[in-house]
Length: 291
Ligand code: C2E
Ligand code: MG
Ligand code: MG
Ligand code: MG
Image 1 (tube, rainbow, N blue to C red):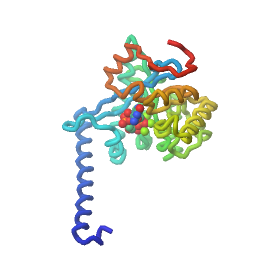
Image 2 (image 1 turned 60 degrees about the vertical axis):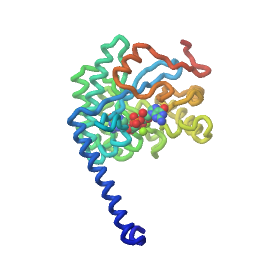
Image 3 (image 1 turned 90 degrees about the vertical axis):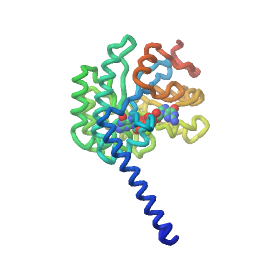
Image 4 (image 1 turned 60 degrees about the horizontal axis):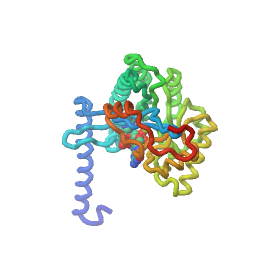
């Protein structure tokens, strides 16, 4: 089709391709620079226990303070880190940084606070993940149960045998494991039961239109019910409204994460939040513990 429009369109097409390739190249160079110059930072988003409104954990989310660009979201650079393999190096930094923070919070009057770290599928392609985690736990002398790893359902299914073996090793070290973005892949819950996992995180796509979208609501109820029958905890991601919260509360969701309570924030702000002992302002009807 590019050819049909004559040489102009054809060269425009080529030009656009070059531009895209160039953009990608520049981004890649900038990312290599970022590793070397300390431009990455972990933000933290609270995980809140729905029945009590208490913050019971937090997820570490990578941010890139790119010079001249402000704070860049991971959606824009994680895919490239994965494609280039750089995610292994950056991922190791994330684990080290998160463990250092766990140790700090364990010393704090308001601590300890469990931290979850996202792990991408290329990080499972060699044995370094286990070594990295073991070394970080050892170096910072932290309780392994304070560290949790989030693996997406899709990554899990990509290379089942290897991922399962690695997760089992990590699990036996006492680290917690969660399945992230659950419901978008094609695994069955019964199947997942064979993995060492303690938590399912319902993908934000099913939360967005709650409670009005009847299909999404049905999926959410089904995930919660089946997860509980398999003794797994359930986290809803991306909770932004009181209506969503109320619905999730009614159906027994364990934890929520979302802008409704807090956006991801820098570590020192998280420390402040912990010390304030902030609670979820709204408790749904039937919430067990009154505050
Ligand atoms: P994720 O692990 O599923 O993280 C949840 C994402 O939802 C985060 O986006 C978070 O900021 C966003 N979020 C939380 N609450 C709400 C809400 O109420 N509304 C909306 N619209 N969004 C909400 P973020 O921080 O941009 O991260 C995107 C993805 O990038 C993460 O999805 C994760 O897959 C990946 N990622 C982030 N940090 C890391 C990391 O250190 N390593 C790896 N491998 N991946 C990471
Ligand atoms: Mg996650
Ligand atoms: Mg997720
Ligand atoms: Mg996601």
